[in-house]
Length: 219
Image 1 (tube, rainbow, N blue to C red):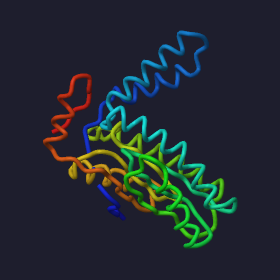
Image 2 (cartoon, one colour):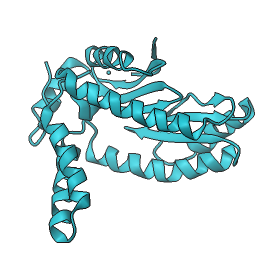
Image 3 (cartoon, rainbow, N blue to C red):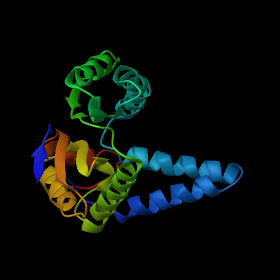
């Protein structure tokens, strides 16, 4: 089942997978060489992100402020997660009642830089450790499927999984968004796909592809 939440698709490049592998290797290295390699890889990935560098920095700041605020509002018996992409915040997880769900959203809305919120927190018992581990596995499989698809630019999509529900975030065209949702929906274990995209036009995509230092491509 594919559900649209806000506003996405893209060409994948194998170099992204190579960069991710290199990043993992860098973390395992000792000394200055490992630090230099890791920094270079992360810089390359940042350059292929469709968000501006300012938006990427602000998303990190939003997460660092909103995640603890959300968990304080939810209380210890709940499980809430915050994801920010291009200043749009996705709330997922589980809380005990609708009042708590609304309280979490109010707290996150107070964080500087937040432009909009998609509140998909479920009112139910907190998910188990086994369920969360399975979600992590599904996220990895979805990302791998994007790379394997060859017509999706994997680094433009943020994948979040909660109780088997896959949320897709990113700056994409409607064509790209539909394609990504189709690929994700075929991954084993996925219950439904929720598109939380910030849509751009095909002309905007071409402009991004032609920006100096941007290695992505589109059609």
